[in-house]
Image 1 (cartoon, rainbow, N blue to C red):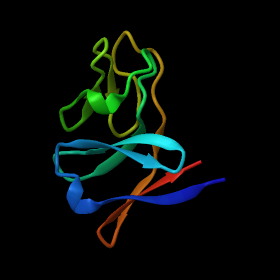
Image 2 (tube, rainbow, N blue to C red):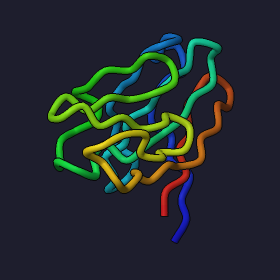
Image 3 (cartoon, rainbow, N blue to C red):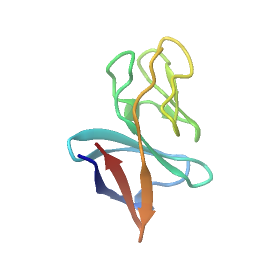
Image 4 (spheres, rainbow, N blue to C red):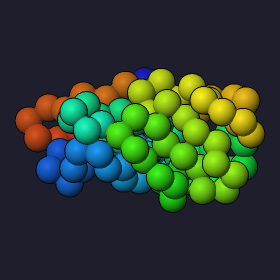
Length: 104
């Protein structure tokens, strides 16, 4: 079942920042680019089972704190070793000041 879930007030996610939220049963990390676009990824490194929200975000990529694996914040694609598998990305909309994430 596909569900769109209200997860956060838009003003609580500044440009260039990320924040862990729960979208239903899914742990998600929201990433807001420096230009203001919001993206959502599964909050789990595909290599080390570590929360990506504990890592670093440069406005485009999320870096896992465990071993330095990097992921594209928009697509979830793995960008470097040791991760060889990407992480799931979720559709995001901002509606009337709220961030909505669609999970399945």
